[in-house]
Length: 121
Image 1 (cartoon, rainbow, N blue to C red):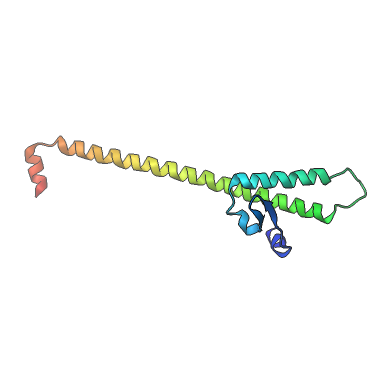
Image 2 (cartoon, rainbow, N blue to C red):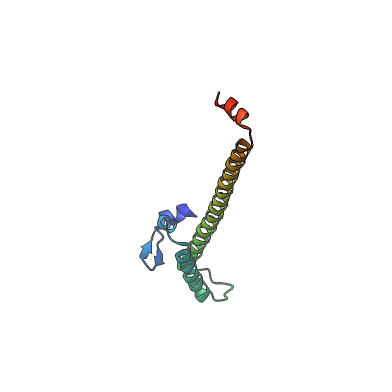
């Protein structure tokens, strides 16, 4: 799918002009969503129920473009989900480390003067 897009030099209309397939990976998700909606609208407008006519070349290209956009959106959503989970885990680990430090301080504070002097070595 991506090789076909590169070989045929597919361009995607956006508010910032024509984007290459590679540019889509750097586009915001809401922009990708709008592009997919526009392509999907063109597909639906071009489709007429015909049981003998073959799809036009532009209709095939639009179908390819829609599949590319849907794939990139799905990958980006999954990446965002993984990033959120990673951030939550890092925050939880930081909180646990903080609590461990407090517990160690409390344990040290509970020792007698003699025990603390022995720890000084």
